[in-house]
Amino acid sequence: MAHFGCYDLIFFRKLLLSLLVCSLGCSPAFLPNSDIKARNIEVNESASADSTIVAMIRPYKTNLDREMKTVIGTARYHLDNHPGRGESILGNFVADLLLRESEKKYGEKIDMAIINSHGGLRTTISKGPITKEKIFELMPFENNMLVLELSGSLTQQFFDHCAKTLRNNVAGARFTIENDKAAGVRINGKTLDPNSSYTLAISDYLAEGGGGFGFLNQANRLANLNYKIRDMIIDHIKDLTDQNKMIEAQLDGRIKIIN
Image (cartoon, helix red, strand yellow):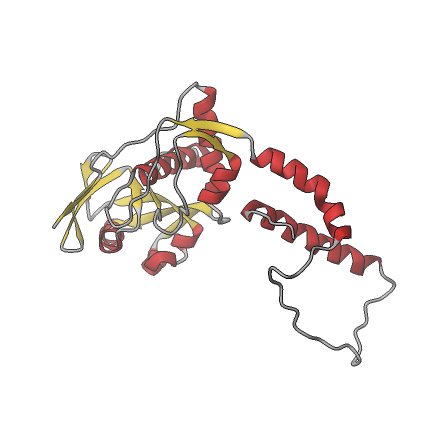
């Protein structure tokens, strides 16, 4: 039985849907009648692959495998993602690149960016060569980036939620977590002003209430960048590689926890 990765599933799902539409469209008529019977067919390890379908998709899978094995960069060291510790090396790396890539796409300065690193990022980046396949494993979701505008009070609520959950990494801001609250929030080096507003680059998943961020429905939606997080990561790594730079990040104290 053939075994496929997450990137294969995305491709084959679209391929099978296309084949179904094509077959129905090319038939003289598709008129179900009452004689049609339905039954459940369990798909498990005992199910055998259809040789005709396997032969048909083999050229596509070969090309896809070749593309996914392409090395796009090199990690100087292991980029880990520690849950429950505030910031992480991997979380900082992704949050920072999301801010930079979102600004380039948006064409204007954006104050902050966020990645739900403990849930949104599904693995780590090991030292050495980085392939496209690895980034698909890291970010298997089809999330796009949005730009929101938050009032000062909503911004404080945003950071309080980050402090409570310990599941998110941020870029463009620093804060201290004390008693499950965010204290001393600084954005672009300046203390959070409750009378100001701030822009935030964020995934559509979080912006639409995922991860407990339902209160962000009060924010102004400025733009949908139509730029997937996965593609941002790939493009950013490629850009660094073109500059002969290795992939690296560090803990810089942007999130401190006081017990």
